[in-house]
Image (cartoon, rainbow, N blue to C red; front, side, top):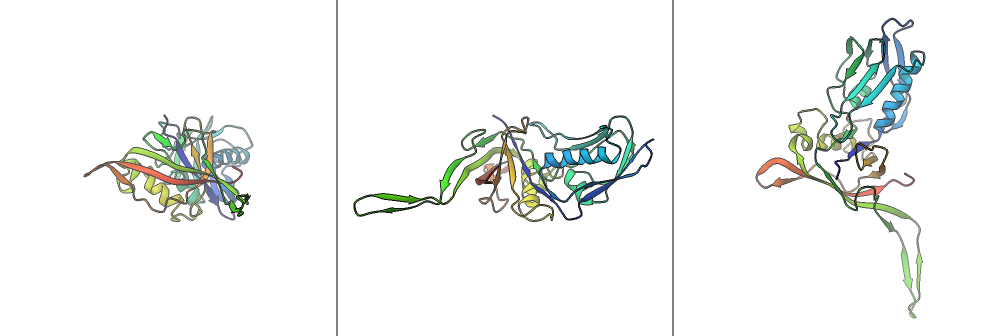
Length: 260
């Protein structure tokens, strides 16, 4: 079994998100780096940020923007340059926040790692139970209407079909990864992830933003994309009555986004 992870879609607004990057001993520094307006999943945002960092500094290919988002990951993002120390000033604080950084990246260093988890990613600390098993995106539903003649002839019209996963469940999640008030790492809890990405608390997540359900966080290319219409609050069940150390987190009725 695996823990998996959930990645929510980020919406970068009109005008994009910018940062100012100074690279030691490289002429023309500091450079303005911009991520264009659009929608990005977390891995795409990191890739785009890395590409733009390299492009702004002469395409030397020395930047890496990576994340610890595997099965045993920390949730943190790392920005690094292979040969020169750098500093980063966040013109757009929303980019800083979504990546899990809390201030200007100084003094100059080769590598900076965030101290908060990425706002768009939830990494469970318990094994998952996907209703039909890893990789099965769900059953098929239709809006079919049928008629039956007096003789028993049946005619059916089908206009649309959709795939639905009845549930994704993590049965024994530690409180720090479940409840926002108990976090030991900011943004690590499911409650805060839901409030950020589904509950409309942050402007750069569409309310009920589409999500990628990753079956195994060590194999992030294997996922399906869903909406979560069945989850309307952060209420969750205690695993053991009268003890709040472990919680059951269940996402009911995940509806697959067409074409994904």
